Length: 208
Image (cartoon, rainbow, N blue to C red; front, top):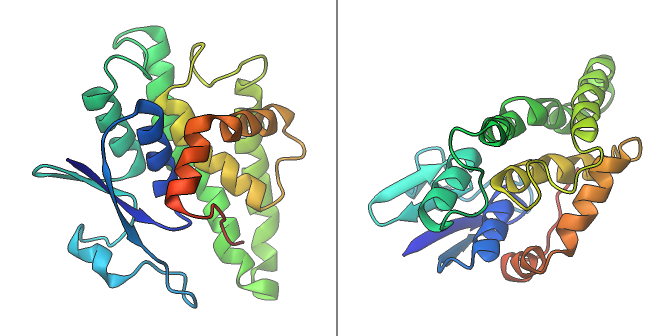
């Protein structure tokens, strides 16, 4: 059976959401961050050498990286749902969002997280980081104009994958200028499967 290695306050929350949307049978093994360092426990390194989450195991297969996990679960368990037909124009847009989330959009958000911890020492870097965050969040907001979902007319893996970008933007109080992205996140939070994922995965909060 598919097993999700679930770390609190991490990207594994969106994998849990995906599994709930699909109704896929799964097991969940919980891990808790260190209260002081906020790092994952060393036990996770026994599952995957990076010691990060999310990680899934499915029979003899172990997969890390959110985009790869989303792609695998939908292809194997989605029964033709939650992704456009391969080769279609919508599929290319879908695939781009899967890669864009972590490949581009998350970089300035994570830089903001780490540099903020430097306090005054990090101040010279914030103008550039703020500019990059605005660039990416503006792009995402524009892509959602007049749309309920990132691709097509129903929920896809693109929405699952992009959710962490919106969540982190919300943590940093950056959603105000981006009404389309903010409204999209509110819609995602209202989905019953999302709410079930929060109930099963634990309190959903990300520290600044």
